Length: 104
Image (cartoon, rainbow, N blue to C red):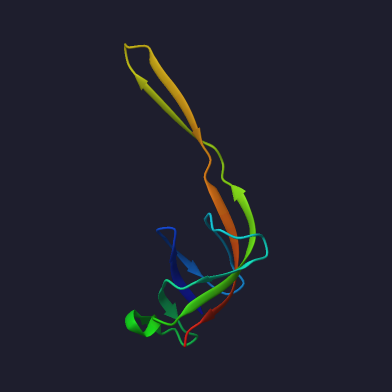
């Protein structure tokens, strides 16, 4: 059984027991989270449920930790003008342990 959820403008395929890294969520480590934007659920019988049947579906999990990703370097330059600029970026993310997929 798995579900497709949307959070932070991105879609994730999740299954119970799986740990995913999503954009930063508000909450402390150990706090429960619930994703109500469920796009699809695949049942144990491999049936894909979509659309209005998922209005009350939820995916529940727990925040396992907050962290930052690897540094990404951005280098800008303009030739013949002596313009060079280096910028670094580290994205914040939250690690979530998925516990259950609830479809009513």
